[in-house]
Amino acid sequence: MREASTELLVEADENTNVTDLLLERCAKDPFGNLYAHKTANGWLNVPAARFLADVQALAKGLIAGGVNPGDPVAVLSHSSFEWTLVDFAIWMAGGVTVPIYETSSASQIEWILADSGARRIFVEDTSKADLLHTLVEKSTALGEDPVTIIRMEHDGEAPNLTSLAAVGIGIMDSELERQRSAATLSDVASIVYTSGTTGKPKGCEITHGNFVLVARNVIPFLPELLMQRGARTLMFLPLAHVLARAVQVVCLTAGVTLGHSPGANGLMADLGAFKPTFLLAVPRIFEKVYAGAGHKAAMSGKSGLFAAASATAVEYSTAVDLAARGQGPGPGWFLGLKHSVFNKLLYPKVREVFGGAVGYTVSGASPLSLRENHFFHGAGIPVLEGYGLTETTAPCTVNTPSMSRIGTVGIPLPGTTIRVAQDGEVLVKGIGVFKGYHRNDAATAEAFVDGFFRTGDLGELDPDGFLTITGRKKDLLVTAGGKNVAPGPLEEKLREHQLVGQAVVVGDGRPFVAALVALDPEGLEDWCAENKRDAMSPSEAARDERVRAAVQSAVDEANTLVSSAESIRKFGFITADLSVESGHLTPSLKLKRAAVVKDFSSLVEKLYEK
View 1 (cartoon, helix red, strand yellow):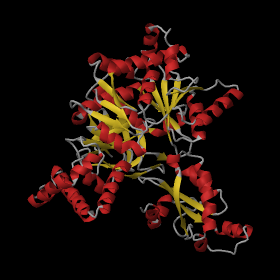
View 2: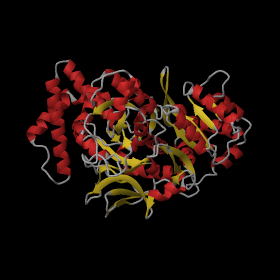
View 3: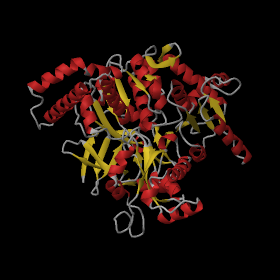
View 4: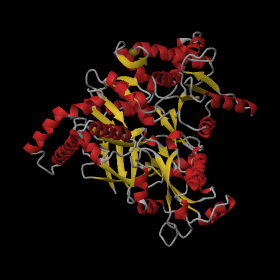
């Protein structure tokens, strides 16, 4: 067993909560730009005093509508300035924010609203409108308190932010302050739902103390990012993800100007216009930038030049990293010369993709490939890889500009201890560790051992306290986009189909979810008879378009259980027999996932070929 700790740098008064951070920032610099709001006419700066006034107006509207301290209020939207405004308004009214991914399925939304107890939900004008109205009608028919839908943009007669602020005019400042100050560090600030292995999301109770202490300690821990004059960043990760919201609170506390982008097609344009000084991203973004640079070079007949520049960046970064570890002399003069040439010819073009002003990037949610990590370091865009989970308010370790080792996820955050158990599982104790699972005492008890949270991940600590993640103890998958995916429900649904004998969902660290499907010989025989087809072997059936179409229908049905980000995009057929004898099934006929993925790795790679 090995442990590593970092001492707490900043404490907090037990009677404070997240809203105190906003009040402190406004008192210190009321005219400083906290946010940049994207409008049709460009980016509009929002000073701290203006943001606070809007938050207070919405909070009064919530109080007038019956929100009491501790009441849950849901938010369903893509990342936006309005999302942030609503989040702080809920806290200002003493409520508890319940974020919901905009890609969530109907069953997921219904479960989260029911489990959290949220009877109010903020939505975008276009977010699941018909679905939500159906849920409202359903709850009313069952005699439950109806779900109140509040639009985050103006929508005619429908309740919206403007009308919400209007109804709060009669609420006294003293009442607002009473509800605002009701929560303390130990009280729940947000219930963040994460996919579980049983398929039903579990609600992680993130406290005000988690947000406040992480924010106040990350700032002096990463001063190169957060304490430089004119620091600004663009948030394009979903704010339903706890990492995005934790970073948002950090930025508010530090006075970093933050903008929001819905991502996808408009992200690159937003980066160019906003010009962030640092950036939070997930591996998929780096993969797309790297692939895009290579594709652009190939289209212009410069693929050889790009290959040479890429190899030089990786070699240069590797030499620098080894030297920092005391394991090498660093780049020689010839490598330094080559790097200098490419630093004038090609690397600035890569940096320009991120806006041209980025000094550092932070990558989390899933592992970034070692080669791409070295490439971006060598190209002048250092990637500080970190590690965390929803249950740790996201970050619990991170590389810093002064203490960084590529291939690791860094050292513990201040006030955090990392322990690696005898079986290799990574355990965490510290300021970011959540309070427990909402209304699930059994799951909470199972998640802790000796006061440490059991992450389900496997890792190693080096003598200097740098953590390296080596695998996953759980079956839970995390895509390159940072989405948690529970494979069990998808696999179970697939196996319900006549043609499917076994199914293995893959996608850990990959850009999307895929599946390996083994046909059931008997089911295939029956299917052929029912469809008046000649008998086929599994190998023949794997090449038959009608068989593929039938299995695709099973995939489509399984995808209705999950959000679009968790859905199966591709599948491939395993034509070999999976049995106890082949080593792919246990004696009780349970599938050995790791063995299947290892033995059919070539098929997995084929699914992700570009």
